[in-house]
Image (cartoon, rainbow, N blue to C red; front, side):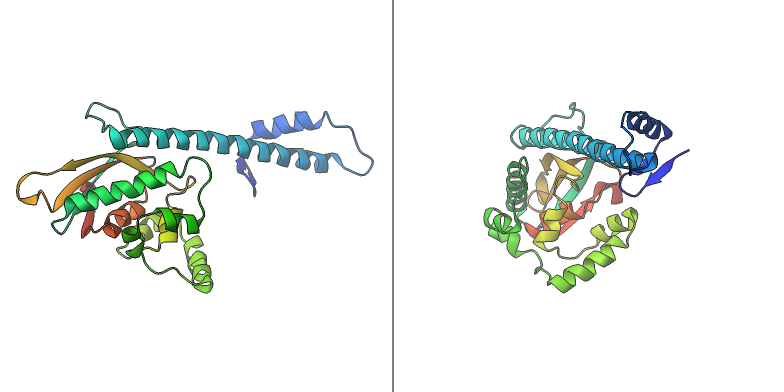
Length: 239
C-alpha cells in the first residue's frame, strides 16, 4: 500500500513504520496525542529527506557542470560514453555565419556554466554578464500581470504538454530562457560540435548535448542558437 502526502508525495509503508518506531521514543505530553506527535515527527523526517535528496541532486548537477566545463576545451572523442541518458544531436542552419553563431552560443553557455556552481545570479546580474547581442534577440520581458497569467497557464499543463509548448517556434524572454537553465530544471549539457565541409561549411553545423532525461525539453537549447543568429534548429530525430 502507498500513502500520499501533500508535501512529499508517495510514502511507502516502510517509511511510515520507521517513523512510527522513532515516534515511540517520544515522551507522552499531556496535551499532545500520539497521532499528532507522529505527524510532527513524520514531517520532520520528510523535510530532512527532501534536503538529502536536494543534496544528491546538487551533487549530480555540480558533477555535470564540471564535466561540461572540461568538454568546452577538450571535446570528447566518439569512444567516450555520455554522462546522461544519451546524446541528442541538432543541426543548426545559419545565414553564412556558422562560425559566428557557434562561437557566440558556446560563449553564452560558458558564462552560464561558470556562474551556476554556487549561487544562481539575479536577473539583473545575468543581464550584465551575458552578451548584449544574445540578450537583444530575446523577447521583451512580460509585465507582472502577463507573468501571472502565463504562470497559471503553465501550471495547468502536464509535463508532456510543457515539453510540446517549449518546442514552439517563438521568441523567448531572457528570464524564461534562464529559468530552464536553473539547477532544478536543466536537462541537457554541452557535449560537442561538428563543422561540415563543402558547400554547407558556412551555413550548417551539428551540435551534440548529453540529455539527463528522454525525452527532454529542447526549447531552451533551440532558442540559444536562434538568439545567437541561427535561422533554424532541427533535431536529427525529426529528419
